[in-house]
Length: 289
Image 1 (cartoon, one colour):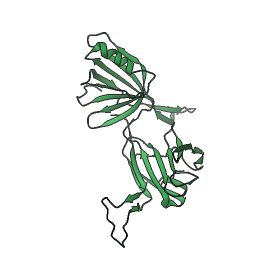
Image 2 (cartoon, helix red, strand yellow):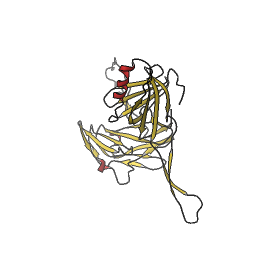
Image 3 (cartoon, rainbow, N blue to C red):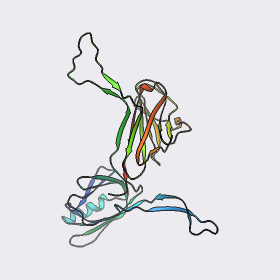
Image 4 (cartoon, rainbow, N blue to C red):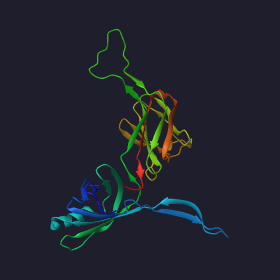
């Protein structure tokens, strides 16, 4: 990507709470950044006897390389060691691209420490590896089973008459619209306001499901993450977090995801479904910025 505008910025956050900006307005001037948009597909193939070409049996998107080039414009004696110190290959980074209207993020590591020239305005090059190649935005939450309050303060309750304090959402089905560029894993949360037996959620179209074979007690919160490489099922009971991955039913898909477009999801429980509150989280992912 060339010719960055005044609004475009690359902002790095490391796992030590530090932030570093490279832009046309920063002392670390942004000349170019390669790899922000392109992705590469890696195919798995097989060759059969007497067959022309190959048969594709699978594929996956390769990790992403980003190379940032720029110049130190101000206080080079001070900023040169600051640049080297920040981009420590031992640290983990989140890169944010923003143009003033859009923000997208990607996780990355430094492949090698910054290369800096000796010019009057030293040029630098930073090479990054993004193990997960998809850019992502902020997590989206959808509630599909909850109690909705129907009053506001100040509140007056007429004598000898009742007042509706809240009502339960009537539908057990919600449509999750995934407007990103690929299927997205889910983070699912079951919350019990009373006893709940064996809560579950199912994709209405594909019939893929997640089911917990456990009786939840009042106040219990079960969180399920279906992201590959970071799968977990956790029970929060009175603040104590417990791994309950083995409580997933045998027919459950631990990698349940939502496809591009509309996805109808339905929640259920074998007993006491009205005591169940359900929230679904997903993070949109994109090919480029």
